[in-house]
Image (cartoon, rainbow, N blue to C red; front, top):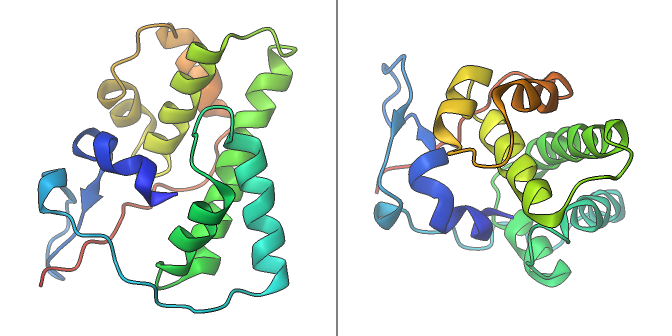
Length: 159
């Protein structure tokens, strides 16, 4: 799932590169290198959850299931990432249910990107950094009301 982030990363990524740093910082996506595969195999439970995540977002994130699985294999802690993505999928689906499915693809994509941002930052930061064109602030707050987890910025390791 991280491959979707590459073009979107400058807006989204908050990284804490120094242990004594208390505030995350934005970093340039051109300075990011994707991690090598860390886990050759994932458990059946992990794979089932990844399939659920992929199924939920496949309309708005065109990445293949195979690439999605490979991306989770690159995570140092895939269970943590899967948990976050499941929470995002639940929030996304809850908003679609709230709207009774009456939402076009471009708006769904904006909802997805907003939730993705929110997974890494506060509600206000996510709204400010998402360059919303279709969702009003009221709609954005409604979307975010379905995502209850604490922000979890992406950790970037300096080499």
